[in-house]
Image 1: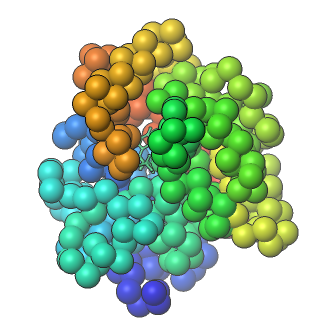
Image 2: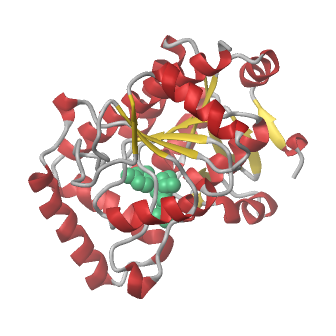
Length: 304
Ligand code: PSU
């Protein structure tokens, strides 16, 4: 794969050429993470948050086989309404290109493409991880493998308790991925500000986060950095409130035999349905919050 195979918008190409701050955004959250039209509204709002902080957003997706680094509003709209869109992790990209398919890119695919384009910071909602019961199913997201192989920083709100959080943290440790909580000692659990597990590290400013990322990259470890930024207090859900809904969603997936790459989208849709929109509100709030922090980090990194 050569960078010639990436199609950058003029705005993103110009920003990268000048060393201006750019933040990558994933598109599975649009195609498989939220219902229409909340997915489109959120995608546009997130791009707006990044611009307001002085950085350029680059939403990444595959459109009819073409790898796009930055999408026009019309492309975002089409993606948000495309019910045939596939979900592509890094390993699915080549076939999507050959088949001229459109795909939402997961964290793993977006990291790979961001790295090729020269974008160092990426904002999302939650990363994939080790699924509950993985000791039987072996279902571990490729996001964790990519984090261990690609030097891109991912700003997330922790991981949902649809996953086995302590096992996810163990695999991140094995994969040599620093996990840094922003402004808290706790590793956050997406809808909730605390998961009951501590984060390995804590830093309290975007400047310190940028310095830590630069130092990590200088060490040549070659891995990503995971920044865990808790959902804003006013939109956080109580763990007890969301945990019952998650347990019910997992039981439904088991009963219907949903596994592999269909599992995460199934659980996400079920949670939105059962929480009567409260989880969707929290989800939108935390993605916007992550976009703001990612933009501040990108601005701090480009200021040096
Ligand atoms: N977790 C969320 N919301 C999401 C996802 C995960 O809370 O939208 C998406 C991300 O794109 C992530 C992908 O990269 O699901 C992980 O899928 P899997 O578990 O199949 O690897």
